[in-house]
Length: 215
Image (cartoon, helix red, strand yellow):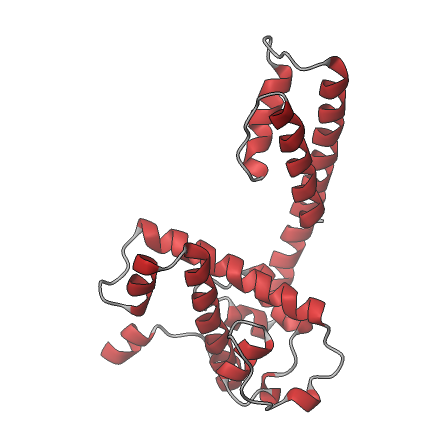
């Protein structure tokens, strides 16, 4: 549903681009599009305006459904200990936690965190076959869904850290200095997957290593 909404927003952007309006990507641009259509100086043909307004109504309906489902997922994520533990990991929110709880095999299937990360497609190559024969009927779509949520969570984490401070000399600071943000996010998602494996196999909440070392 989110993907469909994104396609609708991009369709609107494409139509407006043909008439000289350059609209940034993202759902946040909807307000700007609505202002253009409702402006007194709007020079778009009536037929184009009508089509754009129809798309805006569809996007609005999809957004309401998405918000309802998101609220439901947040409530469900509070009701299971596994989802609660996962959300103690920085960058892991309710959507990611529920995706793992719903689609990932038991963590015992994986030999270590790297094996889980490789199964999710977050490392260049799967060197170990540990757990491969016991993954059952988990589809590639499920793997891709978890991977996508982890990368989105990593991107959000990088944005948050960018507003604070990344320790100078850390692996993250070094990568940020020489790699595109999406590559850094994938690397961070890889580390998050390994942390997820460790957290769930130990059946404990996440603890920041820097805090643990000084405790």
